[in-house]
Length: 318
Image 1 (cartoon, rainbow, N blue to C red):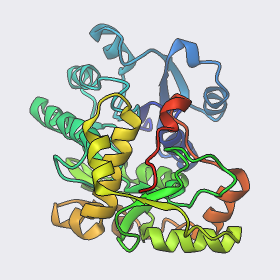
Image 2: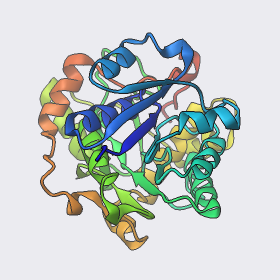
Image 3: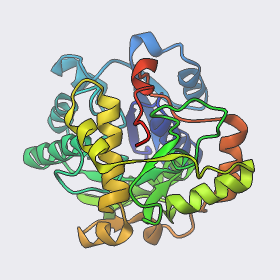
């Protein structure tokens, strides 16, 4: 009997790549990746193909008949393309027409209710569309990426990606994740019939900003107490503007994560989500201290192609 086929749209990104690598490593499914023609020669694409992934060339903006061709034989469709980059609805309409067994839309972010974050509201709209057309689904949230929670060294620039500021409470617990763990957990989730038509939280634990900053100070030997706190007025102004979407997005995230406290296991379970760590207790946890050492050794922070002038549009000290 042939192994089920998983197709990832967005496999060249951080999340998609982690999931693709985990599926290939686990070996319980065949993997295909949908890649734009201009990206087929990227090193990550060549690496995935060399590891056993099937390459399908196309884009989410292709006409319906082409999208249907891309999805032939697919049992599970995973989309990790950023929600403001691509409209997922045509892709899922094609998935419905060809009989894809399960879709995983591009969530992979913090837990939050409708109205808390504009980007999450786009994702919720996709959820509603998937349910409306009757597609089997799994919605996967991952909390906040741990790599964004380390204090930025004084030697680095103050940007929206590498902030020398914070907002809200440093004592607010929140769900966090690392890319390798999410890859492993998603590979398990999509092979599990218990997760069909469910929302699942895949994560590495809960932590506070105070805890990550203390670890950052231990690893770097620096004192980050001089970094400023953005006010709620600053966040409100940023989230209402439409010029710099990155600043708008980070303002929404800071408010939801550190002021409202939306992104917790307790709130996720109260809303009916399954917790992946309870389903797959054998998946190892990362060493948080080692994650901190790796961040400061490599200065790795995910980049999303945002112009430098927008990244430098940071909040100013009061």
